[in-house]
Image (cartoon, rainbow, N blue to C red; front, side, top):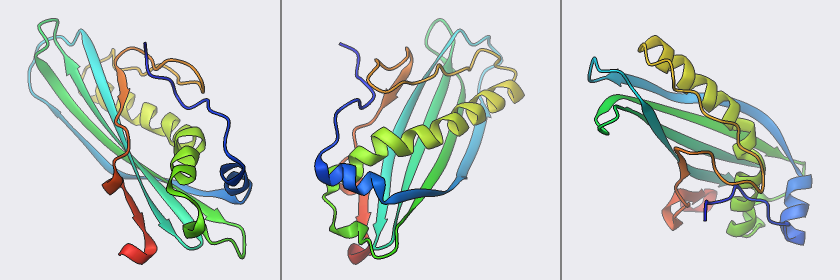
Length: 167
């Protein structure tokens, strides 16, 4: 079965957190590309790895997208790497570090990802065009739906989160 983009009903605490965060900024932190072969690219695969940093009054989500454009023999034609951050500010008086890690992750996969994904998608496509690899166009993602072909997400590990008191 294909992995689904989070479509789970949030817990009461997660619902409370979601109501208290506001998108403050989305920006690029990494943009790299390299073409290895002159061959025609027939397909691509993209892996997106999430991580986040929680501070008392905000949470920032980093989504690192690594794209490989491939020949029909699965030889790598090009590598594209894009990192995007979405920062959410908490309402006055809200301590984001008091929320459970699972609730912060759920916000990332249900809200933050959707704030960043259009920018990741555009950056990968534009970079592919500049490398003369025209078929690098990521499909749209939708909550509760299977991931598009060629796209995968790395599940966050315990070391993918940093809380302000751990720094």
